[in-house]
Amino acid sequence: MTMQQRDPCTAPLTTRTPPAIGHNSQHTGEPSEPFGLRAAWLHFANMRELRRLAQLHGRINRRKQSLDELVTECQRIMNRCIRRMRRQQGKN
Image (tube, rainbow, N blue to C red; front, side):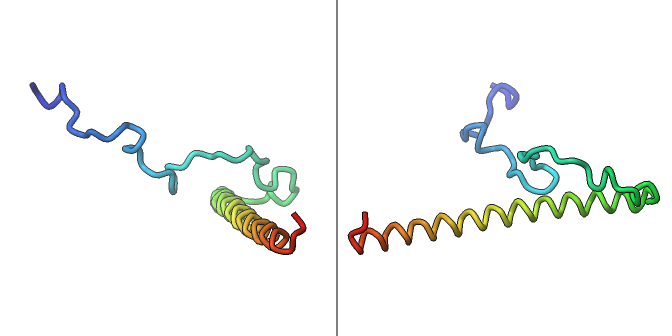
């Protein structure tokens, strides 16, 4: 048997894929309108500025998504604690 016929790795294919970080990540959010598409000032930006704006726009959107996830987690914890408190007080 040659190396080409047999795969030496026994892990399932799903565990061999690289993590979705950096440029490898797939955009899972809703497609958003490009930054400042309707802004009058955008017509005066040069190519270098447009590239930088696009980069910043991506960063801002990712940070907003991260913040939303953190807020959601805080709300889940708060709701669990409220349920425990109500159970203890007999208000279930």
